[in-house]
Image (cartoon, rainbow, N blue to C red; front, top):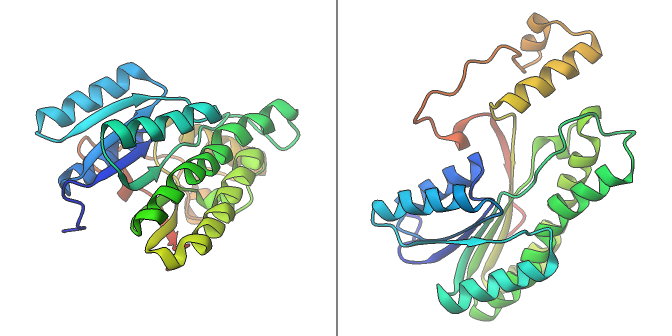
Length: 243
């Protein structure tokens, strides 16, 4: 597949996570120059080194996107030292792994600052630059939980839904300038926290493993074998928020 990304700079946020790293690997196959950001320096260095060993132009930028000033500084550093950002993939969205509906303000504030606001801040900093150049693409990772009700994920899902909404607003604003803003809504992606969350949800609802599987969510998954790309696991839908 040729996505026309050869030599173009793509900023991948949350690059040390499973989805972020898999995204970086795919973009590398397309010949993109990768600006990778994460709050985890060691994991970021490992990924950058792996990509460079393959001849990929890649650089790591440590930043906390929950801090407004760091987002502005990140975008300026990438643009001035690595190149104009043609693409942005935002996979940031940590979740506090416990039932959230009746939690105190701290849980809701955490998801506000770490799920919603990174998308807002990145759009605010990147999209005017893309708009001025007349080209670019932004992809924000949302989740099916933004549309389907899960008591356990109430705070997280509410902020993911807000990311989808603000993405549509950004898309409408830049639609006439040759810039796209899209959202991707993956389903369950296997990892230990996911298995535990689904199991606890089933127990709370009095649903056994067999019935839960019939409803489409297995409680007894096998680990994803090495080499299987994360983005192919559990992807349910993708809604385009741009032209």
